[in-house]
Picture (tube, rainbow, N blue to C red):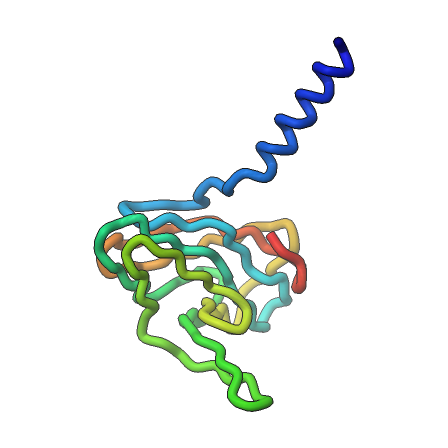
Length: 150
């Protein structure tokens, strides 16, 4: 009986770890999960990545981002053109109704430039996203070593 109980507890624990992640922040129809920034030193540039879900029936737009840890913050898009990766600023990211937009390496992301402080793996930084309809959403991003996933 004890083996059955222990096995059941282990199974419940494993299944709960495999479930969908809880939102790190949400406001209105917007829900943000799986967010993180890369660890780097003072004066360097980092990037913030996340998954943004619009649960609403109307589209929204991510207009801008801000972070006290960086001198400048921009929303960017990366594109592969031939053998060259290029990045460009974007004026916003459309968040279609009922869909999820991934901010990830090689696509849309938030650049944190000329950092005022070191971003150490295991720490967190605060970032504010501003949406056309949902307004401002502030969340604490975990800082990961470059190359590691959240």
